[in-house]
Amino acid sequence: MGLAASQARWISLAARKSNVEYEGQQINQARTALANQSSELWNQLYSMEVPTAPSTSDFTTVQYTFEDGDQTQTISNIQSADYTDEDGINYNSYITYTSKVSEYTGIRNTNSNPQVQYVAPTEGDGYYMVGTKKLTALSSVDRTDTSKDSSWGTYSAALDQISQDWPSTQIAQDWLNYKNNGDTTALDNIYLWTDNNNEVNFVSKTANTNDCLDACIQDRTLSLHSYYADYQTTNKELSKYGVIEYDSNGRATSLQLEGSSVVYSLETASVTDENAYNDAMNQYNYEQQLYEKQVQDINAKTEQIQTEDRTLELRLKALDTEQNALQTEMDSVHKIISKNIESTFKTFES
Image 1 (tube, rainbow, N blue to C red):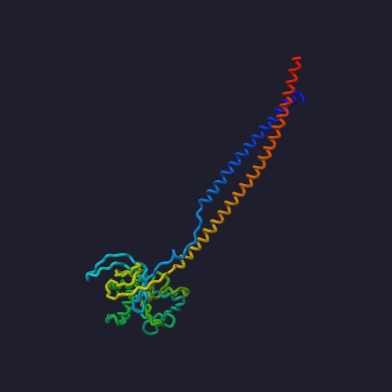
Image 2: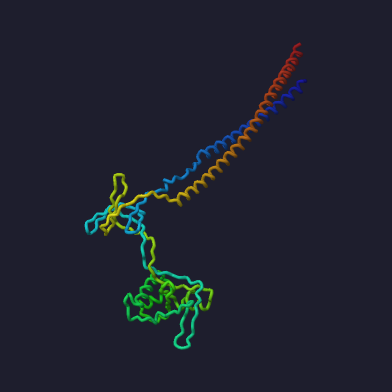
């Protein structure tokens, strides 16, 4: 091989080696980027909070109850207090408990098939009927006997309660107009009847709503709203001061309520809020599924990065092999060039 050809070959090999080295640098930079991505994924994985299953103890509380006659009263809250009443009794607690209370309440009936009709007069006055019940105008009731056991006294008490519990109704407006302003004509718009449950129902003749007698006569598809008052038993929260005695373990053992000399024994029970626990367990299952999905996504991305890195590593090894081969050939060409130069100079020396 001539000197010129050897030099051209060496230049070609040097250029190829430079390209191999440049490609190797690019691969190393790509592998560094992949390593940073992998490190970021692992940091993300380590920073994730592993969901913790709820414990029933977190939703279990100590509940105190006491027997008041034939009723079991449940204490929902006990607060520390320091209150002395006019009798000099010092109360160390303020308690809230649930008790069944019977209260006089205004109640609304919805008559979906009222069968309201007006019977025109043949002799005397016409009248309204609801089904088979004949209605009476409140204005026709004797108002001279106002005792609580009289008809007027009973009706007045019921209408007072209905007006309190249903203040926006036409009945309440007419009744209060009569009570506060003495307008007896307002009673002409209130009708009543006694139903099969012996409840006295009150209803409006006319109103600005579609639930009165006249409206139901005009449109048979409307519902008639009537109102009555009766005693209803409901669970009600009561709060009172009390004297609570505790044992050595801090457990409440007895209770004396404000205004009473009776000392009640307190019964203790552990109560678990099953609904709250189930809600917490459902939330845990959701968070666990979300956590596992995130872990799977991170593992999948990491596996993809590792696959790409292995491919780059194989390419880098191939480039390393190629570079070694190029370097070997360049060394050979370099020796040939050196020999050519040496022989040329020896020619001139001779």
